[in-house]
Amino acid sequence: MIRVVIADDHPIVRAGIRALLDPEAEIDVVGEAQTGDAAAELARELLPDLVLMDLQFGVDARTSGVDATATIRALPEPAPYVLVLTNYDTDLDILGAVEAGASGYLLKDAPPSDLLAAIRAAAAGESALAPVIASRLMSRMRSSHVRLSARELQVLDLVAQGHANTEVAATLFVTEATVKSHLAHVFTKLGVTSRTSAVAVARSQGLLR
Amino acid sequence: MIRVVIADDHPIVRAGIRALLDPEAEIDVVGEAQTGDAAAELARELLPDLVLMDLQFGVDARTSGVDATATIRALPEPAPYVLVLTNYDTDLDILGAVEAGASGYLLKDAPPSDLLAAIRAAAAGESALAPVIASRLMSRMRSSHVRLSARELQVLDLVAQGHANTEVAATLFVTEATVKSHLAHVFTKLGVTSRTSAVAVARSQGLLR
DNA sequence: CCGCCCATCAGCCAAAAGGTTGACCGACGC
DNA sequence: GCGTCGGTCAACCTTTTGGCTGATGGGCGG
Image 1 (tube, rainbow over the protein chains, first blue to last red):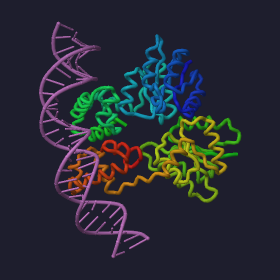
Image 2: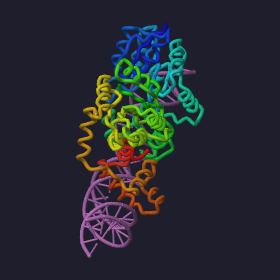
Image 3: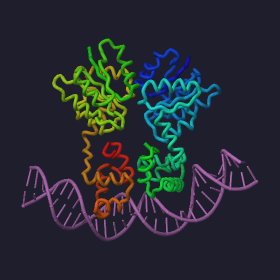
Image 4: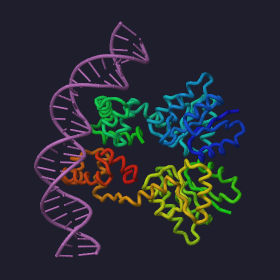
């Protein structure tokens, strides 16, 4: 029996996942959470085999899915596995989730059969990446590594939202010099000379959404 | 009996809506569609009372939810009502949906009770806007439209691709002064002060892809 | 015909962004 | 322990961008 906790802020999505899992004899949905915090809390209490985790918990959420994933994976053994189930497939999200200890990464438009297969794989301790995700990861490994550090990605993301260097600096609690330094590195890595083209290139490569 | 068609590209979401509606005696889910085209087709065939319509059908979709809504509302009387159920609440989406003839607009994070209430209201021919949406719509009506001229959009598009002003000028066979002039207009229309945020805003409003 | 909008261009100034060089610290691997 | 790397910061300089003001001509609708 695979005991599962569902973490998603949308009631509709939770109901959908539950509806898809209920017919499965060996899968038991033991709890639902609407926030990242609640998910971590539930995981600690119920110690399920697996947590199905959304990454996006509304704009006003304190704890992201990535944070919750890290918290859950830091629980004493046997820590529940975490299977990320989200809408987005950018490097920022995937990398963050994998770094936080997620066993798998599925997109919400995946067919139900994929979801079930991924749940079984993840609960067995295997890794379960959607083909799109897996291939992206592969191509990333072998192609000329445009590897941006987490911080660089974070800065670039804020820039893409239209923030000036000073604003980015204030948001991240660093000086403008630091932001410019990060951006300079990003530029050379991406082979560009301006923030706008950096954003364009990053977007086309799936580094940003 | 309220006969409903569900249009959403995510199997999980469809299952969720179905699971929420099934217990309701007077609501009957008569069909599901994964694309906008399929939704319009189903609506024509089945003539349900109501179509629950997502606006986003994956990046490669030919027909958006807005288009499908317009098509459905153009069916001969009694044309099915359309209740938009989506993740996004940008002005462009809401306005487009309402203009296309949607009876209501709900966000997917709405509680199930709201969804049921909205379905009953919409099926009765009433309008059902979530409070957040309603207030946003009001404020939007008051403010003036953001209309960019073709040339301005063209310039902004090149900027979004990362081109500097001189490059844009060269591409369009005009001087840099002209480009700056266009951009200045774009900035004031979008209420921003930098090219990156102009791109961000334009993108969020659907002016650019 | 007269505004009005659009597209074109100019010059000037201030602010933001980018290029360069160099430096410090902490973590991590060997 | 030492090199490497990521993150932090600084000073200086050049280029780009944005803000302001203003000007010309073409088209379109009242």
